Amino acid sequence: MHHRTSRRTLLAATAATVAAAATGVVGISGAAQATGPSSDSGLKRLIARMSLEEKVGQLFVMRVYGHSATAPDQADIDANLAEIGVRTAAELISTYHVGGIIYFTWAHNTRDPHQIAELSNGIQRAGLAGPTPLPLLISTDQEHGIVCRVGEPATLMPGAMALGAGGSRSDARTAARIAGAELAALGIRQNYAPDADVNVNPANPVIGVRSFGSDPRSVAALVAAQVKGYQSAGVAATAKHFPGHGDTSTDSHTGLPSIHHTREQWAELDAPPFRAAAAAGIDSIMTAHIVVPALDPSEDPATLSRPILTGILREELGYDGVVVTDSLGMEGVRTKYGDERVPVLALKAGVDQLLNPPDLSVAWNAVLAAVKSGEISEARIEESILRIFRLKSKLGLFRDPYVTHAGVDRTVGTRAHLASADRIAEHTTTLLANTGALLPLSRRSHRDLLVVGADPASPSGTTGPPTTTLAGAFQELGFSATALSTGTAPSKARIAEAVAAAQGKDAVVVGTYNVSATSSQRTLVSALAATGVPVITLALRNPYDIAQLTGTGYAASLAAYSWTDVELRAAVRVIAGRAEPVGRLPVPVQRVDDPERTLYPVGYGLSY
Image 1 (spheres, helix red, strand yellow):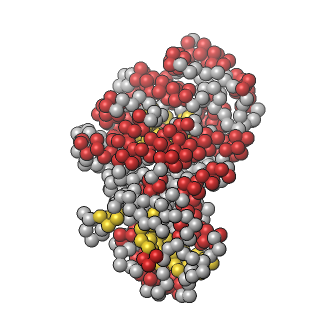
Image 2: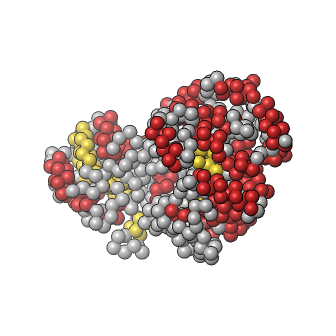
């Protein structure tokens, strides 16, 4: 009876919204907007009217395949049936009452801006058509740099470590404000960025250039700047991965990393960016699937640790915003407990949002059973729902969850936004070596160039292989440039082909990618340098490549921190003297023969 009354009341309140949505019009105007609860008392009344099943659903943020909420391609329908047991996003919402959806490129959610906007609106229509009409919180990982889900024609900004090299809080805030405005125009209102990890371990396989750097104070300042930028644009920022993933040598996607910092080291190295994010009013914080024995002797993953999430994050740091897990499909959170226990333990630890479980049915039913059995009180999950609803209310989703095509055209990939991205990127490229003042290249003496090197798998911010993008950027500046992909592990035959192609060239640019002591990329650089043609190396990802290239004979070396188009174009402008190399290392580069000694310290970088 109580639930039926709620349904009539809320459906009446949102009737205009649902009617507008049913017309297929993208967006609604003032007269058609639903009015939703904004105060805690109103939100609590809304929660009290929900069924237990709806309450449990609101805790989950789930993936779903398809470009459309109701009419995805057949292959995506098949994938949804296989992994989730539903056909479409709309069925997912009606079956499980999920509170959020996460977009992925590989799930075919992000083909182009107008399609994304239509998908977002279709998801919101499905949410408002439920027993209790509720908007969804749509999220994605748009860190920029090497982790992007929405590609061109959206504006792609330099990634975190590139911004760390630039060192400008203003640039970091502007990049986040522009990125946030474009996400909001697409209906994506929660971004899992910025990365607040302090990358003190050069061998970190999962963070690296996703971090702003290795200095906690600098990272904290840039994190705070991005929080303000995103949230000023109407998008919830998410600092990740608490309590800090920067000193791991294991990837939590494939294993369970351990961090052996003392409590004092954690407070000095890992905590400052999260404290700064909380002080900046961040809307959400993401947990890490890592073990930190000094913070929790039980050695449970932080995602499942009450001492870490409630004791430290909630009580010590005073954070009362939304806490979201990292993906529950990652091995780091699945190694110690079964998939049916993980979501229950996460809630008991202090989590609010359960992100992307591998089997939603198992996770959803496990939480439902835990509430029915009394292991988790209904009051406990209502605490989390209130935090989630506060965020939805702050973002205006109860008033109007829809976006418009006009808003997409007015906001996404505008000329002004693209110009800002290029300007910010020009502040990031770092010049590490410049023997004989080879750089900047002159079109008079170095007109004919060969571009070779690694062409790693492209993130969303790229339009083609790095060698092709670099050569094209040189050509736009009046150089003659030929591209030859040699890969991340060039063969002897490929190296010989590159050496032959270098004959008669004025200079060779080599894009390197995570060079190791045994990498044949070292052989490539040495063989090219032996031709007598000046060799310029450009690190496409981690700036540590230069340490492995010592003694190979390169003449100049730079770090770009990513192989997205905006960063590669900026690096070319620096090489060609159209921009100054003002970027400075945000991490130290250690010597290969003596890792305790620093080859290039934090803050190092040459100028012209």
